[in-house]
Amino acid sequence: MKLLILNGPNLNLLGKREPEIYGSMSLQMLIDGLIARFPQHEIGHEQSNHEGQLIDLLHKADGRYDAVVFNPGAYAHTSLAIADAVRAISVPVIEVHISNIHAREEYRSFSYIAAAAAGVISGFGTESYALGIAAAENLVKNQ
Image (cartoon, rainbow, N blue to C red; front, top):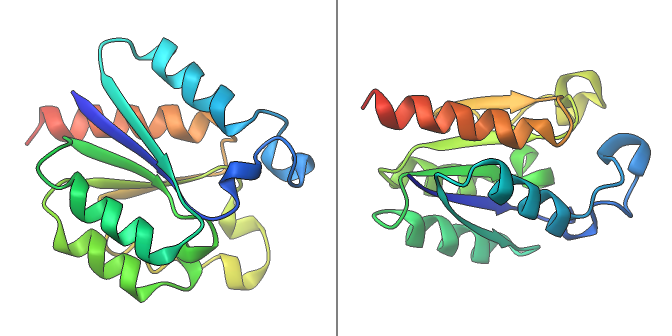
């Protein structure tokens, strides 16, 4: 299976930004760990702090990947445009979050992306990505 791990704003700062919430693992360490843990899959990865670039990457994923595991970061709570991009593509998108967005500030508990995504995994630290890959495997297998 061919997967895209897509990360939104500030996730390039993993390991530095609020480690009490997001942990001490860098984004590169996370990606390297997923590639090692799931050698049966071809895993691509992208990160952007820019809404339009994330939309472009979602558009390009359609037809290139079997599924997208997407941590939209704060754009989950603000971006109708990204939600529309998720709806516009045929590849399933699994939304993931490192922290439990429902246990944080009230404004973080709502996600525009969630209504467009195949599912949401939140609150399991960086393991949320591995759970997202497992969900993608299940979705693609049962299509």
